[in-house]
Length: 283
Image (tube, rainbow, N blue to C red; front, side, top):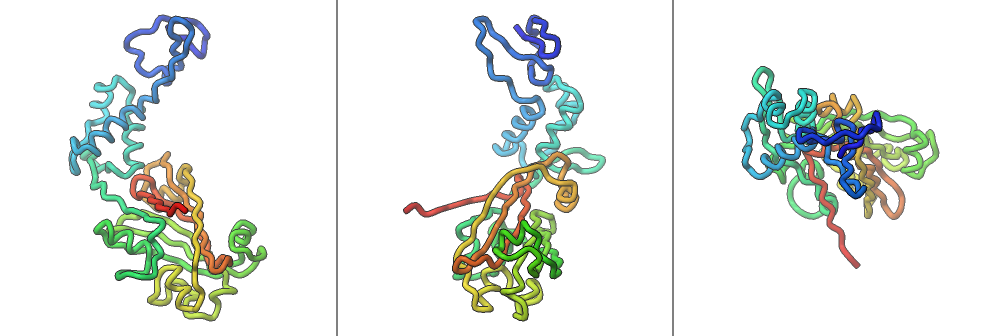
């Protein structure tokens, strides 16, 4: 039996009612126990398609069923079918081709190894992002804009300076093989870098916070990252070429040298395009 949440009237459950969460009804079996509701229909469809893609059943370049096909297969509305595809677009595993349809895209993801990103030894670029991209067989590039400004209360607290203290603000858009994959806004206290060759972060050949600080005799010895998940803003959707209603990972990162913050950044990563890997020693 179903209990209609809107009217409170008991109605007999029909075999066609597959998604009680969508129709506003709650399953109440004989005996009074309440079953857990099934997931929303669009997430069920997305999960089926995702599993087929990850298993190789739907390889790269395969065209997904049309919205009409999904409607018939799952007995749902066109809106639900659109939402299901939007979920997969947000994860970066399918892409739309104008006038053609939705296709499985190359799902090679960049891997962000938190513990090994800032190593001083080893060959290759000193930029952690460039190493991430190279590890995935992709070319990493970025756009940037730097300008001095005064720290607001939030940034001042993270850098351990007074509000209004001068900082260098640098905004970045990172690309892998030409596709946007990460945003970042970095702040460095000018009390540390002003007048040095690395005052303007992108004006020298030395890239990456650790390598740049090493160049001026400031030895970074710790990084703290706070990771969370939220909906993408309209600006992030546009900058990262994301569908609407997409979730992103955010990382609040701060580098310190002997306990003194020397850089803090707000990083935004689309969940379907980056794997976050944390490997930590156990004492």
